[in-house]
Length: 154
Image 1 (cartoon, rainbow, N blue to C red):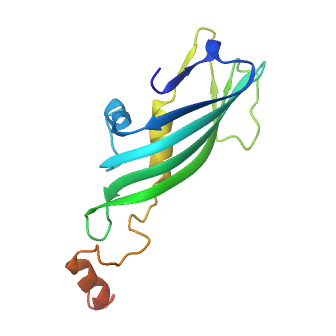
Image 2 (tube, rainbow, N blue to C red):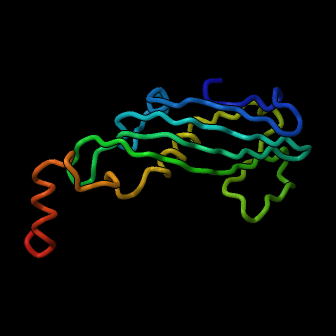
Image 3 (cartoon, helix red, strand yellow):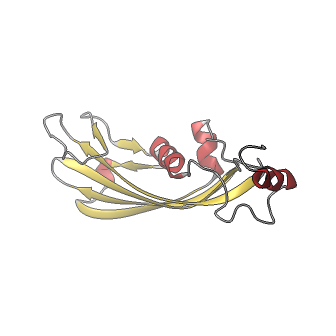
């Protein structure tokens, strides 16, 4: 149960579950999004109702990825929120604003959240992977030269 929930063990109503996620998640998934290292605190607020299970994910932490400009490893903060709904039967229609909707089979008791954690961390990484202070003293000299040259000269 490293990154998952047993549906039968969840109390009715609301409960909260928390995980500290590190490089072991990348090893479990077998992929990396070019992440060299990470630490993410994930909190999942669960609401168990008679017809469905609603999960609210909150992620906050950091990832170390190659800089888009200098290719050195930089640490970037990440933060995200997502929602999933699991229904007990296929007749339950999810609200229109639902991000992800799944139907659990009658014998499904375990929800593995590993892939969701990995996906949500990947989505939280900024598309532009540079430090907010870039260019700064930590940038390699060739990055400074390129940025100072301007678009017509570089």
